[in-house]
Image (tube, rainbow, N blue to C red):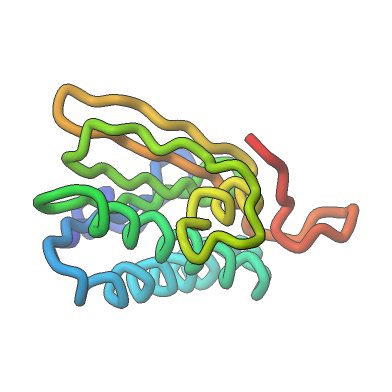
Length: 158
């Protein structure tokens, strides 16, 4: 796993991006991707004093797990994970080398597995899928603090 903090190791200011990225090549690194998400959220909370609710922490970790698992399952080669703080939310971006864009499947209570995109769509404030010159990029946003309406991670379909 390769990892680099935005700002080249300097302390972040609120007007500068707060981000971390890593490249992964094997399925064993899915746990490392989740650990990177936990570490990033701890940094955001400790260094910047931004609230990160426990449900939001769990949602970010689950979303990272689903997106990187899909990248490893459906794309050859490495995949890249970026986590970036943006307006009270964490944007999770995963790039992989497969050109096929994911599409949600119709609800089917008999289907076993292949529910990752449905889970991500239900938990995230937004979802963007972009074809790249090589592969694709999926970007989602998860709100970090409870919203006033009581929805733990501010869930909205994007």
